[in-house]
Amino acid sequence: MALIHYNFDSRVLVQKTDVLVILPDVDWSEETEGKKYQTLYLLHGGGEDYTSYVRYTNIETWANERKLAVIMPCGTNSSYMDMAYGQRYYTYISEELPNVMQHVFPLSRKKEDHFVMGFSMGGMGTMHWSFDHPEFFAAAAFMSGGGDFTEATEYINPGIPAPQNDIFYPPFGGIDKVKGSEGDVRMLIQRMVQKWPKEMWPRFFSTAGKEDFMLTSSYEFANYMKSLGIDITFHAGAGGHVWSYWNEWMPKILEWFRLKGNLVDD
Image (cartoon, rainbow, N blue to C red; front, side, top):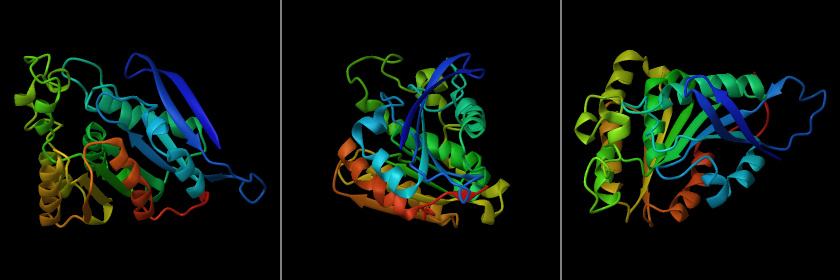
């Protein structure tokens, strides 16, 4: 199995940026010549970085067992947005990153072989990307992602006045600017339903711990998606907004993805 630290010059971000890539072990031979990996894009949460999943979960083992390539980019604290006061992280994640990765590594380009998952801020990024580009993914999963991410504000640096305490200030210009923006997930899911035929929608999975401050929002948003006729599975388990919870649920989600477990024809 290969764990590759890939640093490249992003034209969108106008800087060097880091990506960790997992490529599982494969018996390369004439039988596997020309075949590609199914691919999972794994988005980290706020305050974390591209190394977090390798440090705190068993993602390398799970990926190797399933012959799944994993792409772990760095999104800083951007909310994976084209930021009001910052860089264009959404354009980077949704356009430049897949293009670069598919040119450098043997990754399938088929919708049926693309998956995305994230926790907390990464759950929000997963929603944005999969709702905006449902044609790219077979399935998407958000852990502790909620449905109204603004609920997280009071938990960040309590006692420090806005805008320093407002995690939404750099990406949106303030918490009051989220509604109606590209970070408004209800608007995004409504737009997907209106724009894309149902057969193009990915399958969705959502989970949050019963002690997680995002539980109510996650549950309500899953029900809202169901009311729109969207295929979404929701589970609440024991735990909070912590790595132990996400480490427990990630292999369950990988099973739910229905991965092929081998290389695929591209």
